[in-house]
Length: 439
Ligand code: ADP
Image (cartoon, protein in one colour):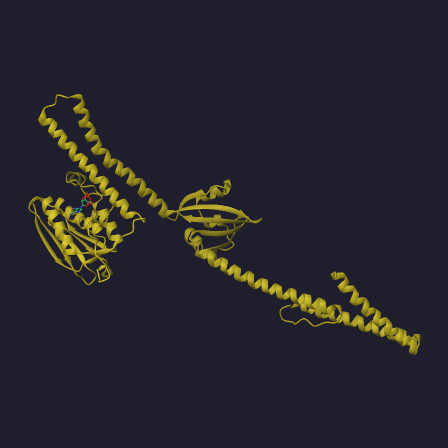
């Protein structure tokens, strides 16, 4: 049945019932009484309607506090429907505020900044990331114009030009930010900010690395090419000169080989796809092997000592061998003939540590914090003369990062240096540490 019929049929039935009652009065008591009864009945009905209208108007003033009356006749249905509407409305409002709370919580967890502004850029809302990126404070700045809060010429130009389909990259409060305005609804705009400082730093490091690596490779290549050109132009070169040239070319070839080897090691250590396979590293064996190699490299020019008095480690044998031998090789290369080099593996309350000390040329304090940067050298020519690549300590740093170790450097120019690498207690091998696989 349609709503119209649902309304009119009961109303018509009620009216017919009323008329029947009046007819009965007429039949038994006469027309005057019937008219009086009709008048009283009508007045009663008008009173009932007015009373329900009054209750309805009262309820509309305070829908939350007053209960809707049950009503009578058609009013029962109207009140019931109003009551249902009110209940649905309350439910919707609750859902909406829960949804809004969830939305705000999600927004506050976003690493990117979100600023909601009206069409004339007055701040309505922003998340914590935006507060951090742009130095805003929602309570303080709400209702203020964003261009007055973010005082940056590039940002103002971006707003004036209105080319919002393109993001804007700018430096703001020492951070590199990528921003974009997205118009939404009719009269609102969202400003999204992304902190690209780290990405820009990594990109710069990558560019520097490529530039440095190309430069490092170009030098030996130029030397080799130079000698090859001489050999081509002067086929009759005497044997002594020829041998000298070949020796120099071989040295440069080795230099390139070392450099590429170290670059590959660094790349592998940095790669997330290259997880570390921890195994038991027998420290006495490892360090004795390194001592033997060091003595061969030194060719009797230095005095060595080795003390091993610490536990075995759980880690990658190859990586630890590479890090330790880089430290020892450096000690040899930067210690003049006749100097001493000490190696000590010891237990310590902070965790086991490896100490390499030398009586070499030492390092000025201004260089120490930069030594682990790639290609950083205190004395470029000395490093090259001794086949250095400038990547040794960068490799040590990466190996330590992967083993949760730390390195400290103490050095006095002209007296010597002490490199100490400390591992956490958790890196000590225990009965569960797998033994290394046999080759
Ligand atoms: P390199 O291949 O040039 O030795 P590293 O990364 O191993 O590169 O070392 C960086 C720089 O730190 C070296 O160029 C050198 O100047 C300095 N250095 C490293 N170890 C020592 C040491 N034991 N004594 C003096 N200087 C050192």
